[in-house]
Length: 258
Image 1 (cartoon, one colour):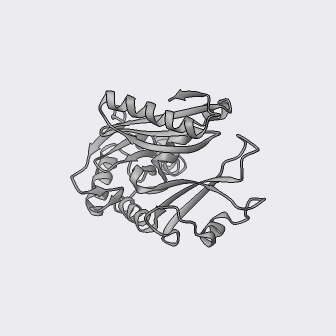
Image 2 (tube, rainbow, N blue to C red):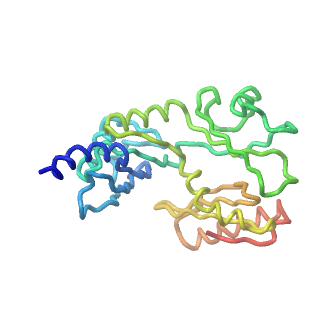
Image 3 (cartoon, one colour):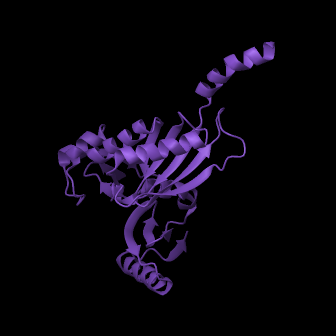
């Protein structure tokens, strides 16, 4: 009796300290959910689910059917015993832009986001910087001879607010939204950090409609291209991109794929 009463008092506290978590990969045609157990997780549940989305629910990374998406994600979280979970979500690739910015300064700006908005360079994002959320990460430690360089990630403010509304409808705690490109780069950080300075790293992300190629050198994503799905065309496209970049950068003597 005493232990049962103590458990009833402890369970809500433990659920607050160790809440369930959801890792969510969002795409236009489906989302992939991985549930990490909390106090309420159902034993034996399948923690990994891929759920197709209705056509038009999400287009170019923008959730158009917010109520339907929120209800779908919320219902699945309830089914898995993940109600009230904290969510880390990876946005569709088309939802965000990624650029490498070289600063025209001798030292890092104290407020880089404000400095970039004031410079307002033409980054061919399709939307002005004053209507976007920005994230700037210094790219340092790979080659001290390179100019001051940052990795810029942007997403339209309206798109980010739309996804926040989706998770509010799902009654989940949104902990972080990050673009798929950033998640990809984080996954290969150890490989990039240990790579020789003359090595060009080719990152291929396989998708249903083909593959996304990113060429990385000195830890900096230098070039990206969508490659076709057919194997022969994909291989030919990969060799063509690597050959093109080696002509631009003869110092990249070797290439490693991941």
